[in-house]
Length: 504
Image (cartoon, rainbow, N blue to C red):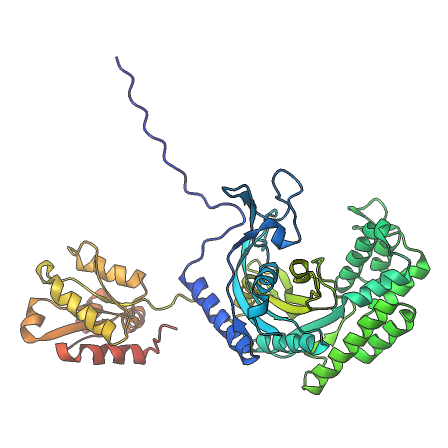
């Protein structure tokens, strides 16, 4: 007896880890956000540019193919002529390549913005995705601190345009030259101290989370997460002397007045040329933003800001949300940084072989959208769907399609029901699932009278909630009325206006 043929195995539908599918509500919220950000950036004179999602791996700068497959942090593959190509991990490195390639044709300074998805080949976790959206603005070709001050002011304006009230965010500004001056002052120059320098910077970065005493441990012998030796995990410290740790903490201490922060940096970095240059740039930025009416409640000098990417060379900035909220399980959530950037004078220079100053800022759109949604600043309700024209008589599809065309020509979203028209109840259920504001019905009797029926689904839902019995529902037939065929567009407009339906 022949064996029964094996049933082909079904392919399992599964989303790769670290990625997400997004529905209409999330997409519409992103669109609304992006348009508000775009409006502010264009107000400042920035123009759009778009670069591809892929670049030659060596052009990205941060990750170079030093193994068979370069996969530290980026997604990479070889093309047909064995060139390594990577998905972009940010929008700045591709811009540097674009400016270098089109240098002579672009006005300098070149002011541009761009948004799109970036990709990180990292371990995914809560709130950490392998694909997420950023929105950047950059000024290339200007070395003046005024360019950095302008970016900070624009970042503040963008937060307020997105509905984040003043006092609920702050743009924090520091300078990598000040940090380099600190490292120089405690004798951590030279390649041999690269590891300890990184440990010091990581410790400074913890000042917004830990007390000065806990950070002092990270600058010295190290720190136990549990507070006592042997409790929790141990983080190895930078092994600085107490005197050197004092210098680091004195310069990076948060102060209410930017002049006090500047004075402290000048005192401890008096012998550091690079440190003094950084202090001078911070002082210039502080004066410029103050002159334009941006107080410390919006933009402030904060010596604890340490931006992670290695290509920053001067001022660095970070936008932090100060609002506390709770997640769906009632646990407290502090969103922290939702954007940042800085000066990267060496990035374009890699392609040009000459100094090309540049500064820029990036908003983490995906992260900020999650924050705004949790704070109730974004409408995440599903948008109203189209008006649905139902099919009452199968042989009159052309008549119904004509109604759809009339509505569309009037600028109203509309669709013809394209499923099995046998059951009118199923058609109305479909319209409900589409979140349609109303449906159009025309049987042979209405056609003979030159009329159509309009069923207001929004009003009907309200009435259904208030009516106690099915009999009462049948007797009232709420929110359904007749009108002449010629009045179809006008009457649909009335229904939409009654419920403030504008499709975003």
